[in-house]
Image (cartoon, rainbow, N blue to C red):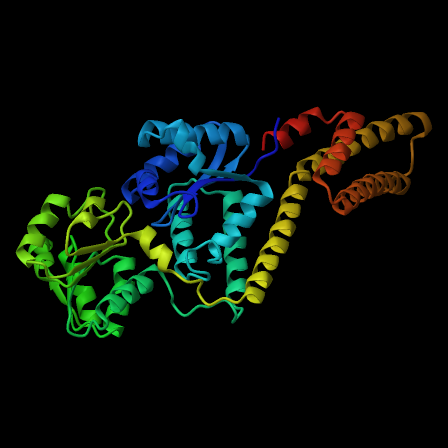
Length: 430
């Protein structure tokens, strides 16, 4: 049987455009159900789903990587109509490569902007969702805890910019460059979630005095408006607000477009050529892609924002240090995982040695005994020291072996020599 290991199956902004990514984005309402499916699927012991505007990833503790990948493939095919030709957009990482990837994601090194402070926030939320669904256990928990520790260490380097640069801030900067100034522009923000809150803060800092905030839950719009000095507007007034706006930032989790091409055409006619800038930060996209074809409307989506993004100020030397830190931490953590899988074998060996010594001690007592109580205690202590010494020597030897394959050769030899078949089953089925 195969050894359990960490596995990542995913799609992100590097491997697929937004039009592909949005099809496989998993809405918050469906994540618990999807986690439950994965936890019961073939090849998977533990599961976590990371779904953001930049990526959809499945972090898995897999007892069989091939079966686990096939389980994800079946899920995406049945629930999201994945075609085999689209599977090429997905990456499949196992073992140390998967660890490095998770550590890079947590540290913001696999983000649109290096050092993105939102990356670790999204990963923590995903972990919390998996824990609440009882789908993250001993192994994924240890991986995530280590990832957060590595992230903290990496982001302490002043060379990795942590100025709050994010997708939202770049979107606001893009709008400011178009209009030169936002001070006298009417700005509409649709969505008051975390991304909306970030965007609202950046808009206020750029002098957007007339900021109208819409959200399906009106109370949340009111709360955010009070924070940034904006005005909360009922969600039902969305189209009317768009017809009067200079700039719109939309960042909701709506599964359907909030603005269709037909609606945008009507709005454009009402505006009589007045420029409208729309920045769509939603995934799935909040605005129909065909809207960009209309005269007088500039539409930017996540792919457009990515093209305008600069690396978040991190110098090459700082990035090299960060990557080396992650590589070293991943290798050490992987070694620890490799050692952990032999622990049941060590326990089984110790128990087997105790059994053999007990049999020989009883035979020796029959042949040479009876012994005085003190002598008998000394014999028992001697056999215990022998078994302890043998087990300790084996553990030391295995820890000094750097290659997992060589460790496995030694472990297999021990199983054969001491007939530890039952213990071997325990190790391989763990």
